[in-house]
Image 1 (cartoon, rainbow, N blue to C red):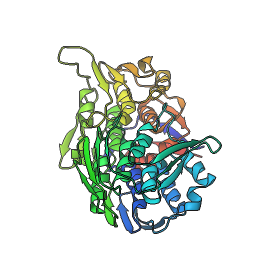
Image 2 (spheres, rainbow, N blue to C red):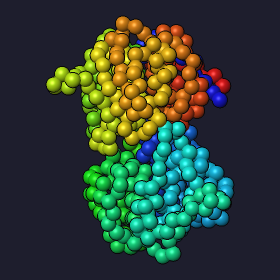
Image 3 (spheres, rainbow, N blue to C red):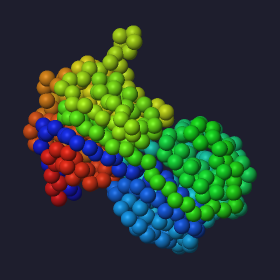
Image 4 (cartoon, one colour):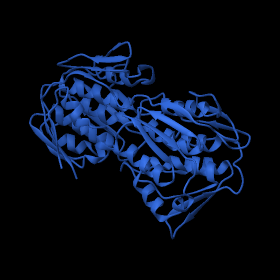
Length: 436
């Protein structure tokens, strides 16, 4: 396992550009198996989760060609059905959370799919009911094979469009159902669909491939099934979570930083969430500029009560940034309640921040009160382990602002979501060393 050795207290300066969006990449890569024609995708981030999914696509028979930095073509002319039914395929699925979005397109293309419970972040239960129930409503039958510890979805005939009201606005569940429905017979209506920018990007790509999806950007999608899809070209958006992470780094280290080509219209309320913590951010064309601040003050609600930052389905605040916002609050003036509703174990990393001197009260698995130091007392360096991608980057931000040298183990978790992060940050003034 690799580790980061982080020398804290260095200010950042200059420009940094976010990578392509991890969550969008996982969706659109899985969509490539819906057609036997070539699809070219640009701005693919060079991160573990995405690279492992590309390797899995090759294993199931997709021809993958690298055309340049972050640019690949995919041609799923024939799929290896023997491999898809093998234990080896199930083992790969169990190690990669992103593989869950192969369920919909493979069921649509082949009429069946075997699938094991996926891996990924250890942040509590992440159920697959929305995925399976939605695809079952399209006509697939679901069984669980205890001997293989795997689910089997099968459709003896072409999937049939229908109306469905999702029990939760699951992003990956919505993506799976969309990909299963685009070639189903008839019309599918999905209400309470996730509508974040990456789902919009998936729908836009599928429409360019010949799909007929209406209502893109809303929580009510209408999909008129088509017989076949064709190839296309697609460019992935910048990663909004990286943008938020860089804002947090600038605030915690008192640095001036320009985040280039941030795709500001697709950030939703992310910049405003940081502004509510007192972080100044200005927009210049499609860049975000965070000026150097020695202090920042948390807002109160209009009635004077303590601010609450809570995650919610889009266009609410993404849960992937609550860990970063929590760390930023540790050095603010004032107090804030962080309410993580969507995952039950995502706040358990705060004990590591408490060991660094942060004043945090963990009320329960979902709520933490942060009492800011107002930059009067720097966090202390510490030795810690990254439990998941987002907590990992939050701990890295804390270490970059701390007094002394910190060690972060298990950084393959960070590598799953952030490409070449130490070199990119060192180029703008950080002092981070990777130790194998």
